[in-house]
Length: 242
Image 1 (tube, helix red, strand yellow):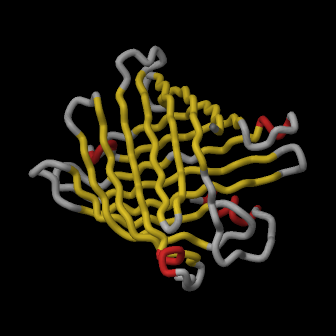
Image 2 (image 1 turned 90 degrees about the vertical axis):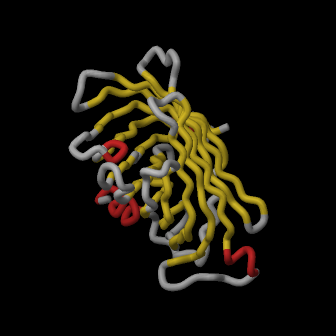
Image 3 (image 1 turned 180 degrees about the horizontal axis):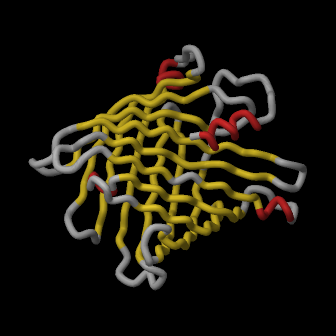
């Protein structure tokens, strides 16, 4: 959270826009890292997509992950469709630092785990005004995991994707999310964050926005709601915009 606040302070001090239009796009990421609290490695191939059509927008990703061999990997997917109230109504729905309000939901699915995992989510999201370009939003969801033993709970997810130009050639990008998930019945509350700090490698050769290199730190407190089971993985990351 301190890194996020610092990155906002470092943004160019331009006039805050009433609505930041984040175009997103598609990318593929190649990640490899070591667990900081146990002797194991993790390799992941991630594909992300963000798109907009009229008042609708959606974000989704798919992760293939296992050890460095990627033999028999797990497939984990999330998808979040939303409706912008500003674009749907034709007039700005904003207040204070909030530039737009959206309503939507999502699904989370894991294939290949030790047990079936399916979650559905529903609720509003809030986009915030930023100097310049970038994305800062907060999603507030009702969270329900499939299965009679699980109760409905909450999920709060701040997420961000912020450009940080240090010079004409050196452009950084700070992106990531935090998931705060309540007690589902079995287990306890959990917290997952995956901040990334990336350097625009393409910009060094005059082709900005094509390929990035950097790091991702994945920290999961109370993994899948298991109290006292924590995960900390520092990963190298190559991101290629498609």
